[in-house]
Image (cartoon, rainbow, N blue to C red):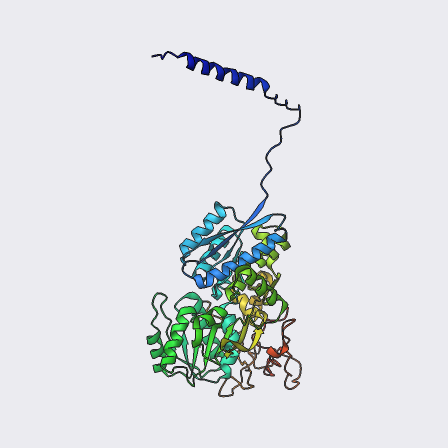
Length: 532
């Protein structure tokens, strides 16, 4: 069907055709391509080195948010310095919901789909163990940040898994001398029913039993993770009539327990040893409930005057408007550790990175640390002190930094527990040489599933022995009753001076280490590693 055009419409159509034809003739001709010279292509995208991160963000925001801010600050600094291996660094983060299967699925997606080079993170020990198994099965480098269980670096340790945070045994070893110095025979233990808390409680009990035989744990009931009744716990602890309390509760659970305990006068005339209570986040959670003179570990952030800490606190506060928490230090130090390892390896390859991490030095806000080749544990330490209130502000007082290098069991004991120490030949020689002789008195190891107890006879800071009956144990290596040292007895060993970290006010450091029993073969603390 056609429509007749009016004269006016025919005139407009002709005008449009004329305009199009004239425009085509007036357009400048396109330059012909030069033979042998291709056209200019779009610039290639800048290379990116991807790192995968997994943590429990929604269920543990009090830890995860400052932790994330910590590694984001490290990421900004790394990229400002030119990245790694000539590439910009990108961190792809995933939430594991606190579920092992979700963490492993996230690791699979990050490595297979997102092509990340390495993994870091993990909050719970259960998740950390799951990621460690994935790492060894798939040859992926994994740096565990927060899990505490010793299984991660001892019984289930592997080539590709390393840990930053002080482990369960180290946490217990940090407070054991002070706890033994209290000379209290009846203890109550308050902790959650998860792998991290159980491992730390086991380590604490093992240390106490090793050095103080008459110790008794009158309350030792792990609290369910999904249920917490602070008043019932305080009542049960009080009914057990302990002489002292060992606590691992944190955050809101700590606040509720302290409130219930104060109401029931649980803490009056009863000393408390409490892990992590000196962390800024836990002191903040306690508010004005923080008791005085508890023996605690933590992070006296505002009082530490070392350049490394002051620089970190200033940069973090300027970036986020709030001061850092202990979790911030862990997040920052984790990514800085990976950066140092990748630089040293010259590659993000898992095997090369695993080799580079052996004895890797890293600068952190707490000072310089090193990753031990024997068990893949870092020497990041903790601060030990007492709770106090100054000008209405809760904090830590009379504190000292305990390097993680001083909180380790003997190397030969680690070799017996770890399937591959990285020093296979030395371990095999040790096992062959000791196959036909009984272990030294007091130096035998518990079953492999338990947490290691160190050599006996730990002296305490008050100059008294942790063993009430005064009996002396044979030193390690002296099972036949002979002294392990062939040198004649030279009398008591003078205390060794304890040097605070560079730039730290010496007033915050104790004047000397305790004097260790003269019977010890190497005249050192049983908590120190063997000389290399």
